[in-house]
Length: 205
Length: 212
Image 1 (cartoon, chains in turn green, blue):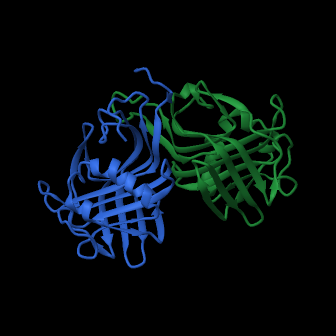
Image 2: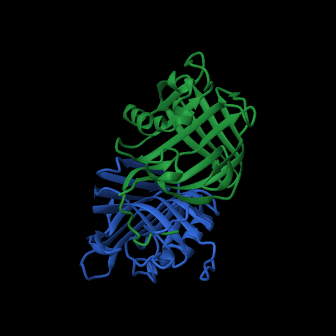
């Protein structure tokens, strides 16, 4: 529902795209694979692209033993995403795999496909070729969440949610194990695989 | 504080970026150069980009007889945007150049800048190029309007706006005539050049005006 005054009094913190895939081997088990992608158009530290990839989220290991990494094309953006976003979300910050993760330079990234049917993000480093696939996509839903309905409960969020019923994370051709599970967001029953387009975080005035 | 509803149950028509530049030679005169760009990440007509430059908005002529031209990589999407959005935007309403412009298949798109001070978008076809440049960018602000304040009179619209105090539209390196002027924007004086990113257009669940 639109604001009474069309110009939001708050401060735009960052805006861009933020799709993700979180997989489990059983509904009540821990996440066994996590991918959270950021295409940031504007932020306090500039633009850039980043991927948090946790191949072994529950083990305190990192490359080359497991692909627990934050892949990014900007060191400043990587530090900002870690401190101001990921580490404010306990579901990620407390994971041994995140705590052991390393920052790796991104060399190439681009989207493929059509978010009406099947959509992909390709992310590359010198040694990694990662493919995120969101298949069986739903119709989009526009969300405008007050801070209390967001993970960190700090900023308001506008975003367009498109859920996926059949996601895949591939690292160098190897498919990570696990499946999406159900989750509730703002009262909507959805999945742990999602596209988020036109996403904007706003610090309330 | 007003009661907000977290889930918009309406139909998302499209999401993406929609920056524009409107130029005049005289503050009280007609538009002399119009440029608008769409980079659509989601729509019911697929993804794609469209750039429109009207170097002679009042002339019923297309390119190369005038600099009225549209370059796109998704013609179905472009037709949808022209019919349901661009033709309703105040600067473009009833402009003969919009109907007469030549629509050309795109070969490439480039963008660049930091979005804090300047930004550009360039779209190329085989023998023609349009470039839009925004300079002296302001701090962004989030905007959210309902059908009563939306140019289409149909949509809820969410966007992040960056005002640009200076801007240029080039067609094949030739700048279109005119300069950025002021306009009123929800009670604020702002310029006629802006970036609009992370934009979402939604037909509300119960809109009696819906006819798209």
